[in-house]
Image 1: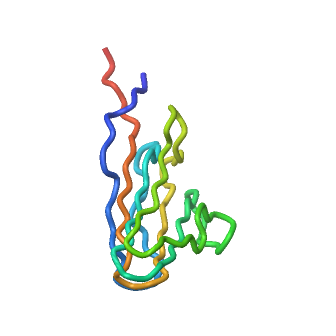
Image 2: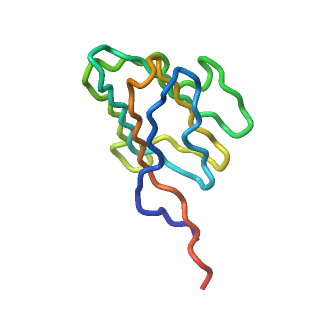
Image 3: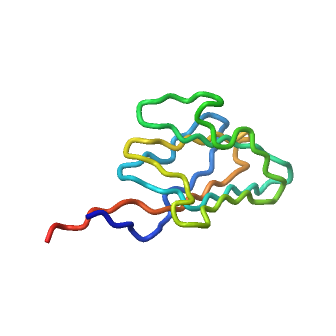
Length: 121
């Protein structure tokens, strides 16, 4: 029997540079239900957010969910899967890759649920 676990924060990250970073690798089936990207600088900043299936490598467009998405100065981008199964589904081994267009400008907060396996009776 498979049940959904209670939601929790999957990762938080604040890229100190503009290189690709891997803040999350799914060790269980996972659904991202909310993503917040906060720009706490006085200028607009961009980010890239990729969902890479297990075994794949970063491709600028193919696996990008948001590519050079702009976040206004002192603002927050919010993605929320507002309905059941309305989030981003990750299978075991899938990775989330993020990239900030400006170092030390963006904070990523990601929330979701992971699959849990109930004990056998």
